Length: 281
Image 1 (cartoon, rainbow, N blue to C red):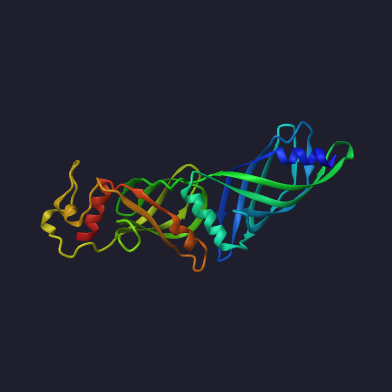
Image 2: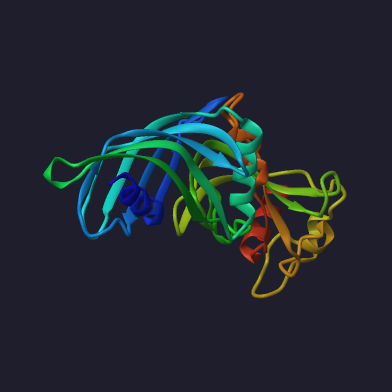
């Protein structure tokens, strides 16, 4: 019986449809997961709660409690919310987040679980539980300016769900660290969501050039760029960068994780005009 159940467990699939991270601290976070187990076999069973290791690149970075699951012939839903995960290996956890930000997909593992199952007619079994978890990544964290006014910028991001809390970003011109110029700073509550969504930010302009001639004008009209914009080097034909700087949670691991977000972004004419008004107002 145990060998049959072990075979079914090994060939079942756990598909994550939501992984939400909130309440980040120096060495922990709260995790909410919605997932579905499939290919569990033709006979239903009950799997008792079990503790598993969270593993990435063969290194354990925490432990997670899987809830009680009642499977049917078509599988089962596995949901839990706000479970506190204590990070035991911060470098590998940050490596996972970095890979999640920049890659199309990744695989981490659930390891060393002890599954206790109850089947029909009072049958029981105990088996080891180890499972590869395949996840889609952010693939470079694509960002797009959607709209700008005097109070906020709206962004369109496609990503995994993490609550970074109050966060500072910069729009930067340039390449390697130390070689860029900051065009504007963005501040706001940054909570990434599945799929496409908008994030409101307060836009703070920064000093770009003290010698700019205000007589050159500060507006962008039609499809053209004003002389003032050209003096500042601002150009809707250029590619700039959307760069994470820090969060307001002192000591939290999110202060390191947010820096992984660096993606190309094209300035809209309206955004350039807004930056110019900040320079000259």
